[in-house]
Length: 171
Image (cartoon, rainbow, N blue to C red; front, side, top):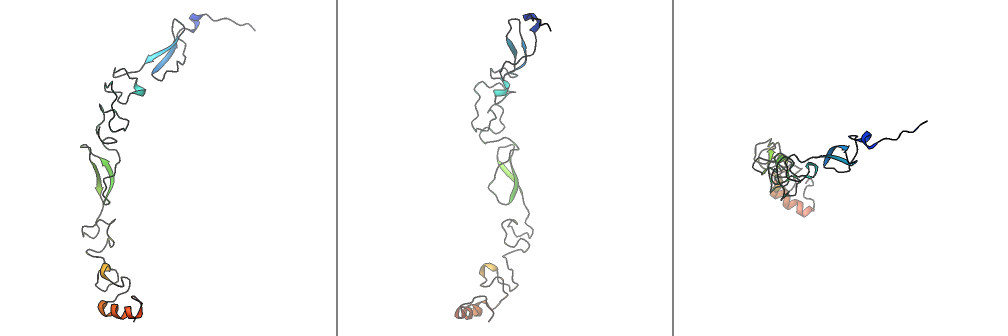
C-alpha cells in the first residue's frame, strides 16, 4: 500500500466547516483557510441566523416587547407576539383569542344557548332564560331555600323547617 501526499492545491475548494453559524458553503480557500459566504440578506451587519429581523435592515436590533421579533418588522412592537398570536382577552365568554391587526387581543364569542345575555360558560342554567330555577317551584335557585326540592310554600316551610332544623327535609 502506498501513501500519496496531497498538495495544498488538491484541497482547494474542498468542503469544510468553519464553525461560524453565520456562513454557508464553506470551502478551503487559496490560503488553506476554511471560509464561507456570510449570510446577511438585509445588509445590516447582523448575520441572518442572529438577526431578529432578517428581512429588514435594523442595526440596533430593538425588541421592546421581548417576543424575539425585532421592532422593525414586528406587527405589534409593544405587545408580545404578532398579529394572529394567541393571547388572553380576559373574557370568559370568548375562545381562540388572538392579536388583531390593531394589536388588540380579541376572541370569538361563545354561545348563549338560552339568550339571556349570560354566556353558557358563566350561566348556571345555560338552557333556561332568566334566573336559574331548577326544582320547578317557580322560585329562582338563588332565593330558594331548597333549590333541589320543589316547595312553593317557601315562607311557611322556612319557619317550620327552622323549628325542625332541616330546611329541605319533607314536612
